[in-house]
Length: 240
Length: 266
Image (cartoon, rainbow over all chains, first blue to last red; front, side, top):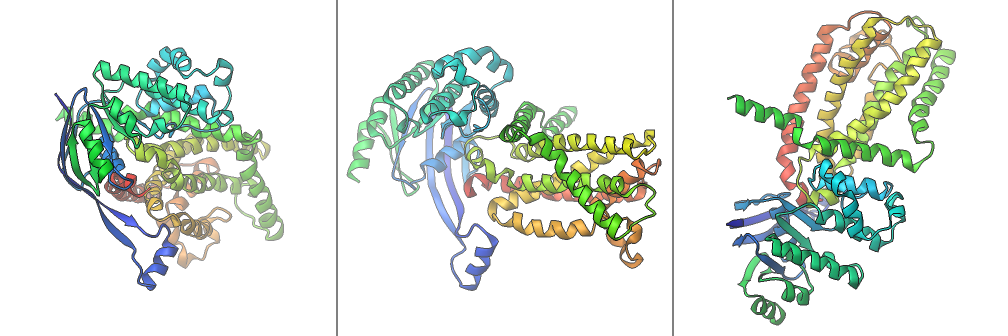
């Protein structure tokens, strides 16, 4: 069973040097660059099987985020085929759907529905979600703008965990938060791994990648330089 | 054939995404009213104050008469749908930019964001409409069943606003000053729509402008059903519907075409 197939995938996008019409007009008169075509992914091919844990490594701007966007379906390839089967849950930039003025409870439901969970299921699991987040009940009814950043993260992670994903996209989330909670997250991800959830893990924390992933893809300037054993890939990246 | 039709309908009405639309709409409404204790009142006070000031200027100083109904009610009936229109476009234009974090991460049809912003504005509109009914009582305007036609006209106006919102929201994502540019257009548009005056006050030579301006069509229709105790002029409403449809289809196609690049440009 293959979950994710990339076949000769190329992704170009236009980088806008100006974000307003005013700047654009100025730039045209001064003959500056306006749009720049960027080749973000170059002929990328890979297949990820169900239940694999794949770490994606590479420098900033190597195309890691673009790759995740294509898997999440928010961006489309310029040429080639992307085939993704299964429920994708992004565990990236936690709390993207949170609103500071709303209470913790309201945000659980809002974020849950954004992630595609049914409301009925959320009502059922509400208590479990709160328990997992380790946030006291009295804070669940206060606006999240009064939360500490740790509490905020814990709540967001708790909601994401309950989405029952088939494919989990993890982007640098473990860089923040205290060690105890980081470990809890990793334990939860281990649980997912055992359940056969496919996990795509983007991180600069090479130690975590080493201990957690079964395969590594190393990207450089939009090209796959290495795809295979974790140790070998990481060494290649370090000595590059 | 039937299966295909059903699939089409599910897509058009975004059946799968109604709970998401509901949640996002509630987010907009709740968040706004939590921020300020007076939240609900601002929505009512704003058009009411505008109405009071303009009534004073135009009925006491300029002495506009012969409208059939007292000027404050006449004005409010135009100001209310206009406020809805202008506020909706303002918020909808920012609806994609303001949710860029979501655009980059999770897939759902992007028009959901635009639609829920507009629905939150419908809530405001309903609140301000209560004041209108009170005004009708104060000025002893006779109530008729024709007034109920207000609702289908509002649906039409909503549809027109939605079409335009899709286009503006998408363009604003590429160039952030589209909103400022459109503010200028709105100011001009306000004066070219019979809100503070009636169509009859406009030089006859230029009245064709109103026929091609959907907002003018809607506001005239509102006044006909609310004050005239009559059906609206169907042929001009027809033109309004046609223009709304054209704008919707063009905007929707552009929106869908650009949708795949939203995540790349934010």
